[in-house]
Length: 113
Length: 115
Image (cartoon, rainbow over all chains, first blue to last red; front, side, top):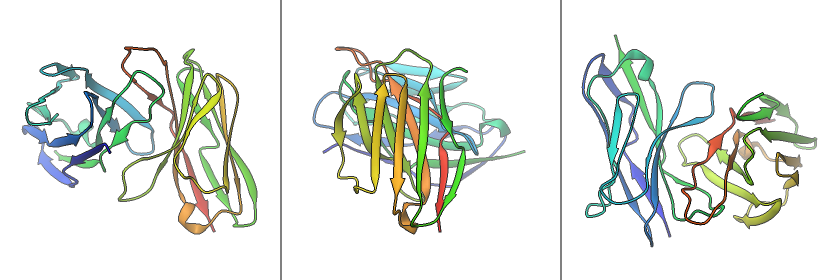
């Protein structure tokens, strides 16, 4: 079956530091990959996505590249802000049908001023 | 209202109570989902409805009963729950189409506490 593995954290960084959150996946086909973010007390928001190998998703300064050879989709940001503090979830989906997403456990990110 | 809304946002219930969670999507999507989010565990897919028909039930206990009366509304009926059912219940929707990325939009969730 499908699975997603990501570093759990918490990850604590200072403001303006470089961020990497690792994500690797196992899938039987060619999935689409997503990063979602959850702020305290809220639901999940789609941060970025990539649908095929070598695609780069980007949004709000965050980037992730779909690496089929290493089955990875690591999230990066060059300079984090306190407002980036949240839980980040890596996820995959194998179809355009009504398939549920397979999520990692989430990485709690804490940015200190 | 925009996006996906869920009510109530918080619910406390005893093990013998019966309650319902409501989800409404204002995005014109044709698929809706229930997920359970527990501490220290990945989000668990509970139910999927596509075109108002249930297409997946991941061995969820029968004390959880979903209902999808139309493409915009989704309910989760709860009865005789256990304390371990305490969690954040998230609703999501997407547009099902061949060749289309299954990008899902989530509601804010209902925080359920079972005493």
